[in-house]
Amino acid sequence: MKAALYYRVSTPGQATEDKYSLRSQKEELTKYAASQGWTVVGEFQDVGSGGKLEKKGLNQLLDFVEEGKCEVVLCIDQDRLSRLDSLGWEFLKSTLRENRVKIAEPGFITDLDNEDDEFISDLKNLIARREKKKIVLKMMRGKRQRTREGKGWGKTFWEYNYDKATGTYSINEDWAWVIPFIDKLYIDKKYSYKDIVNELNKISLTPTGKKWNITLVAERFRSKAFHGVLEKNFKNEGPIRAEKLVYPPLRTLETYEKICKIREEKLRRKKVEYFHFLRKVNFKCAECQKKLSIVHSKNVSATEGYFYLTHNRQYDCKVSINSIRFDKNLSKAIKEILKSESMAKKYVKIDHTQKDLEDMEKQVKAERKNLTKVSEKKDLLLPLYLDGKFPKEQLDKQYSMLEAQEEHHKKQVRSLEEKLHLIKSKMFNYNLITSYLSVAERFETLLTVEEQTEMISTLFPQGMVYENEILLEGYLSENVPIEIAIPVDPDPFNVKNKWDRDPLGRYNKIQEYMNEHPHKTQKEIAEALDMAPSTIVRLRDKFGEYKNYTKVINHDPKGKAEILKEYYLKNPEASLRKTARDTGISTTTIRRIKKDYGI
Image (cartoon, rainbow, N blue to C red):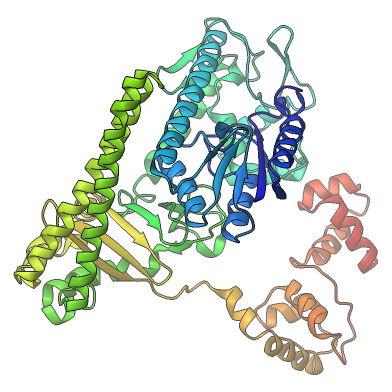
């Protein structure tokens, strides 16, 4: 068989330890594959938790599997491959099963097409998850105790140094200036977070060599560490605070309380501004099946003050839809559905064909089959318990999980059967839908944003987001689902795609303007044609040098050369460092522009 090897350790420290190292796993698995006469066709590895599905090595392995390049995945133990929750484990299994790929450990092969093998594999995953929980609980107990004793742990702020031997903190003199600097800007000068970030970036990058951002500034205003307090927030117990002062103070308690008061006032003023009426609907992305949320963005001047339906975590999926593309369409849909049956058909499927009924009957059949499969798995637990092969505690947990799955499939069967019955008896009709939505008539004019939020989330608790439409999902009765398709308008800010569609046209437009104005600067041409100066450079690199133009064309997207010329006229003796601090342009960029433009 063609085998793909997978190795994993939980922490970077384990990666080099003999017993758990990636190298020792590789050696053992390579020898075992050779002893079985298998051909090793791929190797994948991760350093990270087995409880997370999103890992680079595991994703590469699953892509490898889906390309049909292996017949078995070999790992030192199944818990190296997975300590996933039920949803993640089912996804991983289905990927392997659909591609007829087995899971192998030295001495044992799991064929996921065999129900008994799959059941044993499920139990192994359950035990692995239980062991992971025990490890995490033990670690958290230790962290809670260290916090009570005033001993440091975890990542600390750049403004402090941490001594592992004594568990104590000292001030990092190189970065101690940051806290009084930002406190003064926030309290005395009333600067916003964004303005403070700009001022910090004029002075220096962070110790990691990156730019300061709003999150870093907010952390420093929220933390109690800078007035000496060690406080950590634990999920089950809430905040735990050390009895004594642990950090050498960089601000006073009085200053911290002033900062808290200012932050509360700003939050109170902006609460309504950042409130969107769809915020309580549970949206899912049709492309990647992950959660989408309504978030507010003020980071980009071109989209200031807008809401976006987007992923609130970093995923490869880049779905992000401005709410102005669907807000009015939702109100319009509800009005038109309530106005007439013919208009309602634009948004809701009312007329069902014979094929629709046949498809629904197939869905019912498939759900019943899933229900039977889960029930059979439950029946298998009794002989395993009597044989004493697995602890009762583990079998009880597996039983609870199967019961939850069984209840889900029962609900799906009931829902589909009831809707099928209503359609066949002609009861699923326009009147039923209008009675359901009548409560939402004129909701945008009669209700506050908070009341709109509660109403919409009650009518439509969940939704599926596609590129050109949003399906809002609700229930006409306890079990009868309804879907309303809300169209998504074209993106009004899609400037990049316009440029991509006709780059040669823009190049020719620039050339025509240069023929008429050969002595204009790059910045003046960009302003006249409503484009960035860097676009002129990019198009030149793509299509060739411009003709009949007398000025130098260089990459200067923000007219930095003009800024520096004006600055040096007023400050001819300014040092490189002072120039960078005053203009906000990096020292490297200043050197390049001075050389290119002869400043």
